[in-house]
Image 1 (tube, rainbow, N blue to C red):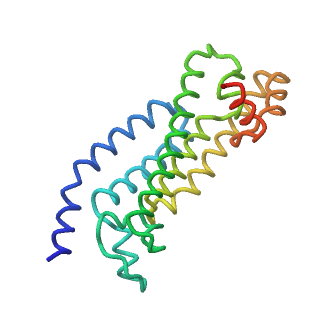
Image 2 (image 1 turned 90 degrees about the vertical axis):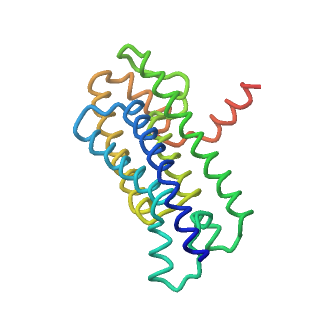
Length: 216
């Protein structure tokens, strides 16, 4: 009886799944603005990641069904156990809360990077950008996207998203390299000098420390 109630409670969350999928998908195509077929393909993989994540989180608990059905794991079929790291470690609701805080903190940092990077590009007027978040990493939007994916994998890992995550990282790293070849061809030594000074995706600890000190 309890399992039946839990199943119905899960099914009742489908409207939330659809709402979040639509909202996240709009943000994806708005802020990343794919243009070439490679960019559209990469965005499509992220779209699949979004659908797989939130359909599993609020709709059909595919990951828990597979783990409890095919592996010798005792994980009760309930929405709270979708916080899988906590469930596997037996950390209970406290562990799930910590998992949520850590995951969404990383996710929000990623969103901030994506938005700030988009704003800089929007007002760039087709010239090299080296200020703001672009003074810390050369591809803040892609770095932000990676943080969003990592945050979601910490908060609510699922089998499809764990499979899709390395594909997303690989595809966007490839896009970044292709974009940089085009920028070097267009701006020459100006962009090469920028490449030498600023890391691609991960800011240096020294730059982060200086930024924190200067912001006080």
